[in-house]
Image 1 (tube, rainbow, N blue to C red):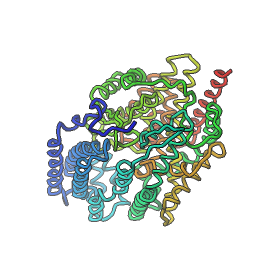
Image 2: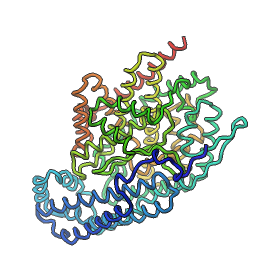
Image 3: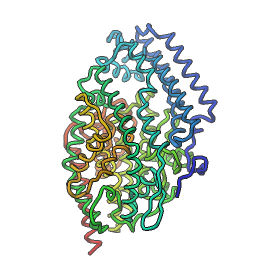
Image 4: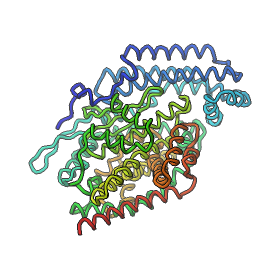
Length: 600
């Protein structure tokens, strides 16, 4: 079935951006207000940030500008995310991006002046304002890497240009690629990005699944050079900025804002690549046996353990699952979940030009907006629970912290989302003693939660590390290089148990995470924390839940190590990750055991 145009999608399946602004005129009024406020601030504060009172007053005004630009930017960018073919919304977002860059450039003097000022005065300002304290601490931390004020101003003005690689990537992927249909045994099947990733990758018919992968890969390969050029531009830009700011490597630069060490970053990749691989190869062999496949290919890795036991779930039915499953987090959290459904925070629609995958975007002081494509599968329930984890985090954090303290390290940001997936799975396991149901829930955890975060994104991270090593040494990357690196990464993980062909090698073209710095590895980092806290909740109950809610409310006031410690987890050692890997292995062993019992 061909995807509909956005205008033909039922409104009840779309999110409601009037929750941000009732109309475009209101948005434009706030855009003008933010611009005017920035001009006033430049006149009032430039060259005058010399005492604690003026510094804090300036930062108080900055928080207001950031709130306005967050609303305006959210309203315009979210309109684009659901339809990259809409020329009006694309053009409007381009204008707003330019305005945001002008505002950021105009106000770049603030941090530059603070950095050049007397540290004693900054510390005095920190003591007098809790709302501004951590921002000032971050300014002091960044001091060794700040450039001349005029350079910082110029870089801020180039914000839209700096984001061009990601814009080019999305335009090629979501607006330009037009997929041809494919035929299997005389039957013709339509094809598109979301149709492939949401439907055909899970199709139980091997011939259809593999033919879809072949046709999909053939099409994206036609765009491999422009996609590689966009990605190379991104990583070269990041390397240049790292060098300009005095970092020893691009890794140090990208990890700086995450507030984690290179050791923590490398540990996630190295331990999972070596310790998890044997467990996942065992899972691949199980799938091959159950489905009676001639061989296990990359195209077969997402099929279900029990293809005849995959309950269909409507959007309305998902509400009860999620409300009941997440009720352990309390009445306020459940009220937020209900509000998300009732007030249309979620865009469920499947239409041409819409971003693939799923995400949750928070608009400070308003609510969150969740994008996904609903396919009536239980996997969608887990995806929605995942994104609601981000929304719950954003709400608790937003109510407890100023906008300057909502910048959580990306190392930690996937913990609240993956935690919700684990809570949902543990809830489902308690609802039935049926062995087949238990196997199905466990397989959902492996094939969705852990495969997605500990394998798919981890393979991206391992591949990405190789790319940055090349760039750090002064090199650049081409489509041929990127395909080779991805193929080698996948082969090292799956060994002889899964055939990795040239189509699998081109999966580097499919993920937007490469344009977000070192983001891919953080999925496994967040899920490591979530797994450990989930086990605490199962063992200790409400006290562990209350600790977790304190973590969610803490926002950016703590670094990842501090946030994990508040939840009772020490992520400075290997142990949480090793224990999580063994937990995954135990689930796979249990799936194998249940399979043997059910087949006996």
